[in-house]
Image (cartoon, rainbow, N blue to C red; front, side):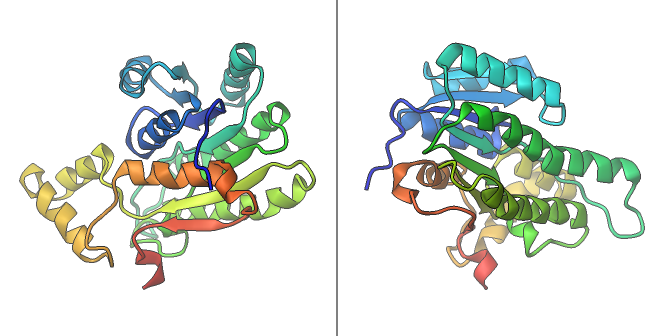
Amino acid sequence: MSLSLEGKVAVVTGGASGVGLGIAQEFADHGAHVVITDLHQPQLDKAVAAIGPDCTGIVADVTRLADMEAMYREVESRYGRLDAVVANAGIGDHAHLGSITEEQFDRTFNVNAKGVLFTVQPALPLMRAGGTVVVIGSTASIQPPQAMSLYGGSKAAVRNFIRAWIQDIKGSGIRMNVLSPGAVDTASLRSAAAMARGADQVDAMVTAMGEGNPTGRIADPREMGKAAVFLSGDASSFITGVELFVDGGMAQV
């Protein structure tokens, strides 16, 4: 069983930080040429420098179809093909029922649902048999925390995208799966913790979150990358349409 991605060309959206960066780093370490997208060039430049010479950064907004089509034209121009897509870009928003605004709904579903469609659909003409798509979901798709109905709903939507899409592309040889993390130790998680409780309480909050997990800790972004490598390589050649919970067991208890 090989986990090598040697010579493959991969696109990872939202790849400049957090889970996306961890995935891009693992892809590059396993031999892939990685194209990461994000909204701002300085953050992309920093991420590309961290990942290494097998990485390129392209500014693109997943909610804008023209941006994504232009990005894929650039990928085709540089590499002539596309082997793997990771639709990672996503956002979260807190709002209790009764206080959810139209702006919050539109922004959340534009990035987390429409952004997935605009990442996957224009990629397909570049892909051939053996190609893979991994959509980053969340345990919130089945266990949404209080005040996270928009986030949980958008992640449940992409799970059902995949269940329909594998039927739409039957016979193409392309596989599609959902990778759903639980809590991951990222800068955005720590920033949210600092806003909620204060900077001096962040480490204690992260520790407490881990104590509620069967593994006794929360995940590292690179662990999401390892799972994405598995779903994007030959080792998972007969796996398609699944939602793989990479959460230390939290979705099972």
